[in-house]
Image: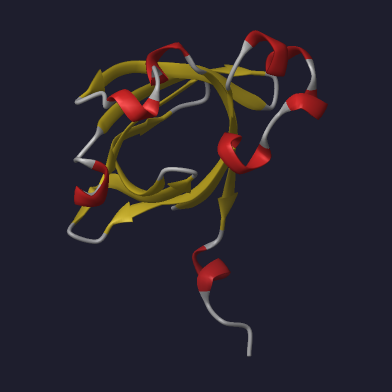
Length: 130
């Protein structure tokens, strides 16, 4: 099972009201979610956003709820964030519900709304077509 995940963080009330005011460089994220090769009963993943690369784990995907924990590497102080999303039409709406080792230079992720879409893709999606 493979998924692509793409989404937006909303920085402020003003950005929530106007797409034109969103700073895409700071607001977008993308990643992949896949079956953990060391434990096929679990999902794992990788994500990239303005703050860098992160590992995804403790992932749960259902028709109505998406949960995951995101951990940045040592270059980001091992920051760990837990996200919860609820299905709304064709996308998920959520927020950070737990933040460990919040660093002063990051702001408050716990108050940032986020929306994302999950796209299920076949296993051969990542195989070079050449």
